[in-house]
Image (tube, rainbow, N blue to C red; front, top):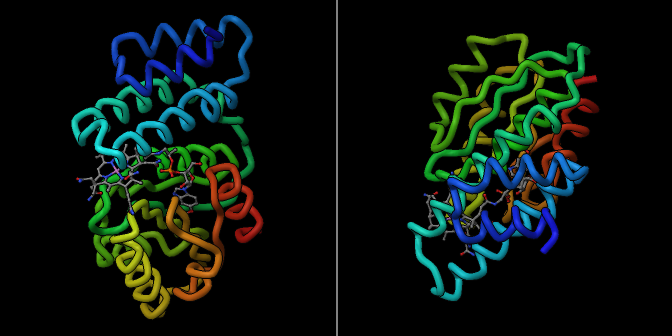
Amino acid sequence: MSKIAEVAAAVENGKLKLIEGLVNEALDSGCDPLAILNEGMIGAMGIVGAKFQKSEIFVPEMLVAAKTMKKGVEILKPRLASGATTKLGKCIIGTVHGDLHDIGKNLVSLMIESAGFEVIDLGVDVLIDTFIAKIKENPDTKIVALSALLTTTMPSLGDTAKAIKASGLTGFKLIVGGAPVTQDFAAEIGADGYADDAAGAATLAAKLAG
Ligand code: B1M
């Protein structure tokens, strides 16, 4: 089994205690950190999701797989961040109210930070008022980034985007993303931009803030 396949198997099976050693072994053997992330971890989470859908596993297994991936990402973090020194301004990011998924949002946050933004991460299940209060507190915000992972929280994403736009606050661009989100939906809710992955979100944020 390749080193990346071993990382993938550990995430898929929630081998929390093994993941640090396996990611380090993969790095030491010369594997590309992005390949470890994409082929190893994100690929494995796709399999976890598919198993959950078929009721082969349940929420506890999904949770331990998520914890395993999070730990793996922590090890990869220094290799993924480019250490950009440019200052593109502030980015406020969060997963919208009702939604507890944060792995994708954390990757977007990491990539945006490494593109040169100062990131203010509000976490998960973020209320509309919290986003608006944080933007008011940081009038120099350049990007507000909203994540949603559930079809059932797409309305929450829409409500949040529309409320931020209707707040009268200006000077920033609003970007959205997450597995069920599409370019069309982003346009429908008045977002300034949509990206389908973390690297795309960072490129988009830099373009819109420039
Ligand atoms: Co949940 N879950 N989950 N879950 N979970 C999904 C999303 C699901 C697709 C699984 C499935 O059924 N196949 C399904 C949603 C189905 C749907 O909406 N139609 C689902 C469900 C149903 C649920 C619950 C309702 C289950 C239940 O309780 N019965 C529940 C809801 C809880 C809630 O939020 N209120 C739930 C709970 C959980 C856990 C807590 C157990 C755990 C999350 C832990 C955590 O995040 N800390 C979990 C997990 C792990 C998943 C899966 C397996 C993996 C998600 C993930 O981290 N993917 C997921 C299945 C899947 O995705 N295949 C699933 C890896 C991550 C890197 O990808 O988050 O898509 P992703 O992020 C990508 C892009 O989407 C994009 O960039 C990222 C990196 O490239 N992106 C952006 C994300 N945000 C962006 C923002 C941007 C731009 C791009 O701009 C601002």
